[in-house]
Length: 287
Image 1 (cartoon, rainbow, N blue to C red):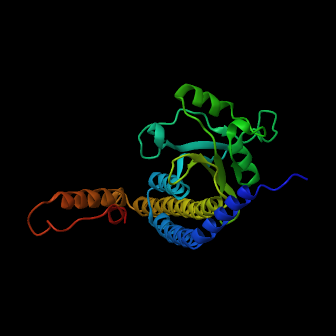
Image 2 (image 1 turned 180 degrees about the vertical axis):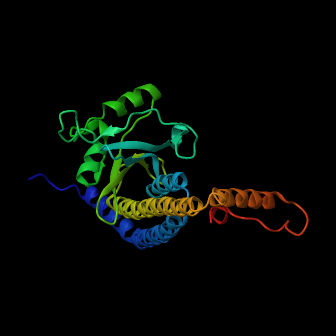
């Protein structure tokens, strides 16, 4: 056995003492960060439940996930009836890149197929794998990963000069445990240095929690939309039946809502007089 270098041992002991002295501050800082994340998580849940516009809701999900994980970029996919993952929103802050959502820029990429042409699962694509299995995939470096096809990612990097490295891909599951979408985050950044780092297990848990809240919010929004469509169809059916009873009143039920909307719209435009302070919101106009 070789002899122990006492100078090295002394330095090691000094480093240990330094770590011990810094430990309380490190623990305090960690607890504060954790409290902040929990508080933010609760705020996000409330915000998601209140958002009524679907595009705004989907964008909020991605933006909040990026902020929660300090990720440079991300993509939100929604599952379609024909077993594909449709690109809804794409963002990369360092490239000033934003497509879909409220950006007004249409995403030109084809949806990701969950199944290949021969009917076999498309496990080569990371988003498809997560969309099929419901399992979160956390990758430290895409260029060192052999289990998935990152050829598209590498082509994007070659074209833009970007360096895609860490990936966190999480399923969006509704209350029935059905996978309705996939949330993918790109390049976690160190909060102080800005260096690209892997997504930590703590961050993964937070993002998975957010994805669960997001899936419930999306499902609720879709259910409300379906109920509104059903209600409108029911009202139209009743109106048609009433109008059909008399040739003199035919079309009356059809004309009333049109005239009512015209009156409400006119009131909204009034700037003086007794109705200047009266304004109908979008939901009130719908009612």
